[in-house]
Structures are given as C-alpha cells and as structure tokens.
Amino acid sequence: MGLLDDKQIDEIAAWIASTAPAKTATAAPKAKEALTGGAKLFQEKTCWSCHGKDAKTPILPIYPNLTGLSKEYILNQMKDIKSGKRANGQSAAMKGVMGLVDDKQIEEIATWLATLK
Figure 1 (cartoon, rainbow, N blue to C red):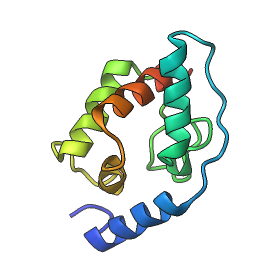
Figure 2 (cartoon, rainbow, N blue to C red):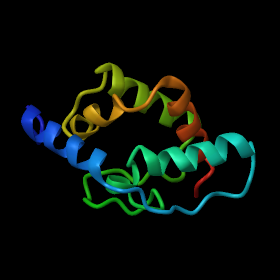
Figure 3 (cartoon, helix red, strand yellow):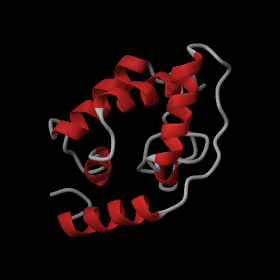
C-alpha cells in the first residue's frame, strides 16, 4: 500500500480541482503554441499546487521537481500514471488528477516542462 489510501487520494484530487490557478513563468518561446498551451494547462489543471508555481519547488519533499527532464521522460511518466502502469506511493496522489487531462494536453504540458531548467 502507498502513502495514501483511495479516500485520501480522492480528497486531494477534489481539493486540487477546487483551487484557483496561479501564474507561472513561461520559458523562452520555442514551439510557441505548445509552450503557451503547456504553461496554461500547468495552471488550469492545478499541477502547480503540488509541484510549485515554477515546477521546481514542490510543496512536499516527496513530490518531484519537474525541471531539467526530457519531454520523453515526462510523457512516459504521465501516461504511465494515468493508465495505472505506474502506481507506486508518490504517483498515487496524481492518479485522480490525471483524469483531468487528455493525451494532447499531456503532450503540451510535457513540451513546456521540458524547456524548464
């Protein structure tokens, strides 16, 4: 069993979904639409509420810093968490939130995160 039970995960996901997005810094334009979209989605889908407004200062030390990672790595992790393929302790908290994003949005978020250092 992970750090959180199913009820706790559902409560965290509900709280995250109810919070207002904060502004985040965007990276230098690269693929402008994807970067704008990814930065916006990072806010709208409340990723920032656990991983920090800058994606590198998470609220708890067990949550990962999302900067300095490759797009492929980020895509694989997000897709594996969403599908349930990856279901270890820390990823359990993300399972409910991943239901809020589709594959295109995952791609946009990963594209933007991969530009952050």
